[in-house]
Structures are given as structure tokens and as C-alpha cells.
Length: 265
Image (cartoon, rainbow, N blue to C red):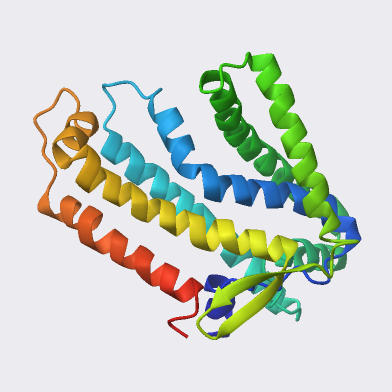
């Protein structure tokens, strides 16, 4: 039960005493998480426009979701049991990967080589995610604000640089800077990174999912949704699909949002 709790429940104060040697990697991880949480729906829409009409969008979406979820679960089953086996704490949240795994590799024969390969793989995974979500923002500058691609890249790079500096200061000179987070139990104070993590990951993501369900069901309508989902076929949405969009998913998102603000304990 302890391992399951640590695996499923995020720790908001996990970055208080982060080691300076892993800040550069953590900044990449920070941007990856934030961009993923805020931009996942835009990424799906952007890359969805590139899918051929002959593809079955529903089966493709299910396959991607299953593969992504299984990869995340397998990664957790590698990191957390390894930490227990090494007698190390697992209450450090995302920093578990960089603190615990680095310590484990340091104890293994040839661990430096294996650990180097492992973290190089992590860095490539983060960078590949960044390219995806950077493209979304750059295309927004390019298409909506009528900038050229080169100018859009420069403007976005400046914004990222400023944000990078600001977040980095949260691990140093601004480490004592706290922001309020409303909760049913009262006002809680989080550090800069923790507050941004909570805002994007635990508020914007479920709220975006909830609004997407409302858009599909009430604004776009199931008829238009069916035409896009089942192009060139006679398939129709099942009652189960409609129930997921109207009831099940919104209900889970509301539960998540209530939990974020402390209404569920």
C-alpha cells in the first residue's frame, strides 16, 4: 500500500531541497511537464490534422493511450521497486528519478556506464517532447499573429529563456518565495516550481479535459464528432461512447478538481 500510494499520489513539496547538480535536467523535465500538461490537447489537434482520412481515429487513439499508459506504469515499476530494494526513501516525488536512481547506479558494478546511458535516454525523451510542444507555440505565432517562422522562433525562444531564468531562480535566490494555493483546509503556501506544477498539472489539465467534453457534447455536437471520427464509413457513436463524454469523464474530472482544492480530504 505504501508503494502504491507513493506511485499514485503526487508530493507537492518534493523539490524543496533539490540538489544543484541535477537542476539542468530538472529544468528540462519541468518544461516537458508544463508543456505537456498545458499543450496536450493542442498537440493532439495539431497532429490529428496530419492523419490520413483512411485511418481509424478511434482505434489509433486507443492504441496510443494504451501504449503511453503501459510505458508510464512500467517506468514506475522499474524506479520504485528499485528504490525499495536499495533501502532508499521514495517520498521525493519526481526527484525520485534523479536522486534515487543515481544512488542505485552508484552502487552497481558498471553503474556509472549504465546510469549514463539511462539519463542520456531520459534527456533525449525530454527533448523530443519539447520539440513537439515548441512546434505548437511557434505555429501559433506564425499563423495567428502573422509572424514569419523565423521571427516566431526568436520571440518564442526569448519567452522560454525568460521563463527558464525565472523558474531556475526558484531553486536558488527565490527558493523562499512562496505563492498561496487555496484549499478547503485553508491557504497553503508552495514554492514557485511546486505552485506552477500544481496549477498546470492538477488544475489546467483536468479543467481542459472537462471543457473538451463540453465542447464535443454541446458545441460541436455528436453528429459533427461522428463525421470526423468515422470518415468514409457508416459507423456511429455507441451509447457507451456518448456516456463517457457526457457523464463518466466529466465526473472524474470534477472529482480530480475537488481533490486539488482539498474538498475530498
